[in-house]
Image (cartoon, rainbow, N blue to C red; front, side, top):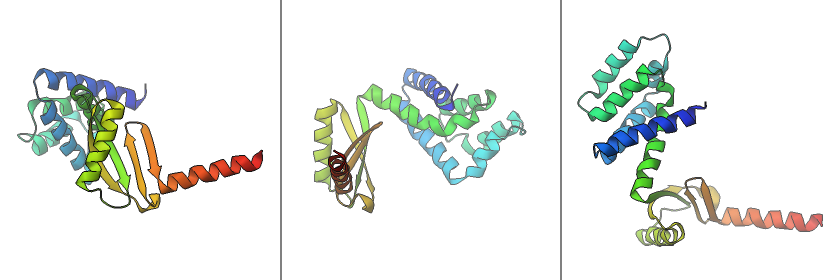
Length: 182
């Protein structure tokens, strides 16, 4: 079974517990904080994933770092991952948990790539367009990328809406190549 499938199952179980205890928002924020710590300190994640380090030592470090900073639900979840030897899936858990939380909220995250930062008016226009298209609330995150040359690229889940100048030029080039072949 792939790590992604296992991570989705663990995220689903965590979501159910957090939902039951009405801690969805808190657990989501805590998972992001833990992931950020792992991203900033990859050696700590490697320590947790090392097969020759005793679970008790791993739990002791987790307790030293996170006790009092995380809800009981998130803290116990980290310990469960250690008990089940699933420390390797943690980096995927926040993403899948957020997907479940957003699904429950009727919300989708849209990553909007543009050449320059979007104005609030532009963000609201994108939110309105995609809200109508997807029939869900939309939360926009703006990324900058000069390579798109202009326009925007919007990613919602695994769907990509390319309205960039670079994308249009690519499509034009492909259609010209196909016309030459005929």
